[in-house]
Length: 103
Image (cartoon, rainbow, N blue to C red; front, side):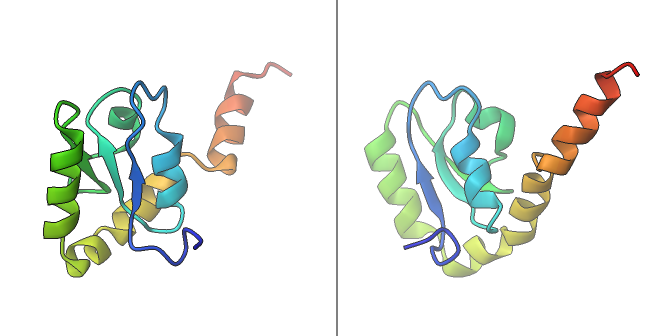
């Protein structure tokens, strides 16, 4: 299954540097279930473009959140996900790098 066809993405790796997996899902308008720590906190906002899972009770909290999140709630986050992903686009990256270059 591709990211374009899923409802949401699950990223529960601990000690994540940046949270790129969450951003990859957001490119397709998919919110991420992710641990509330590390790099995920730089790229995700709970109930805006993601669902944060308690890092001290990952299994129970993840299962609870997946089972209680409605399809409508997931769909309602789509535009937030897409706008967040644009912050990390190649175009944005190039613009920021160019601003540092001295010609």
